[in-house]
Image (cartoon, rainbow over all chains, first blue to last red; front, top):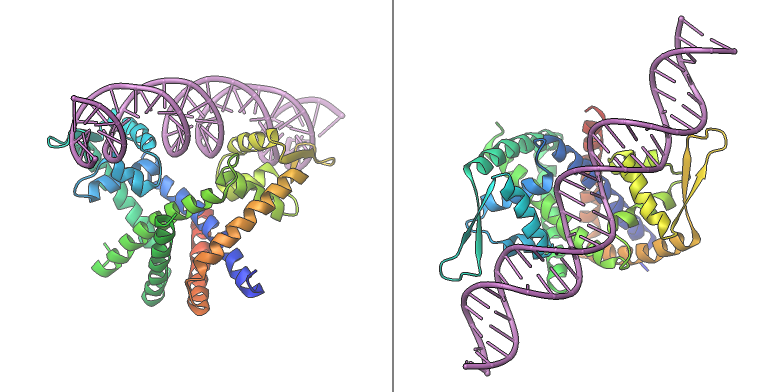
Length: 150
Length: 150
DNA sequence: GATTAATAGTTAAATGAATGAACTATTGAT
DNA sequence: ATCAATAGTTCATTCATTTAACTATTAATC
């Protein structure tokens, strides 16, 4: 049983991460085009940013089963945002890329999100922000570690 | 267009919040009983912690429409975790409370989550953690503000 | 006081997101 | 050559969410 002040920090973290998540997600959703969800935008982003991307890569990154990725990709493929191409060497593998339309849509939305995040982070001094991000990064590594060893 | 180093901070924040969210949610899900989702646990928590709780309160806190709350409460009501009682004065209003079973289930799961968060936060010096939470709190207020004025 | 507004909540249809189990196709190992 | 492992898909089911239409009740106004 942790000491009383640690317990308070734990409670605070739980409450803050919940609220910041909900508010943040809600604001991100507002930046989306009407026919796109935030998950779909995150998918476009990951495919756009990675040199080569397979459904398995996405499943790992999003921490869901591969069948969830298939369904997600199908929805976006129907809208003409994503292409599938088979690897010639290993014909089990599928590579995902954005179509021109997908790329354009991604860029437009990502621009809006950047603008939003910019306006949020503007409320902080650069030094405070950098310290925050250092700890956030460390938190990220800790979580990765726990997830790896489970 | 923000300067180049600010742009880097924005990118970093976007990437970190995405990854920390996914990893965090995945770990929280692991603490859940098989017949409960994390949303359902968050609902139990909010009802448990608030003196009196209506569907409208929940809709506000979770930033979803009231019909989404009705559906959520129905699922949990069927499992016998939640009670509905009408306000005698204003008969439009419904008060939500936990049944004994709901309370017991909540306590058991919340204990496990606390244990998890404790083990995560143990990787940080208290001073670093407190500074992090101060900035996180500030971020929370900024997001609330934006959400309020939209 | 009767009519009209607003509020609290629910219902129903549609869509998106996730899982688990069974399956195909392909590659790797013994 | 056979058997196991890997990549991806399909299908049925459940959960979460939105929109629009609806009931019931309360508040406001004329």
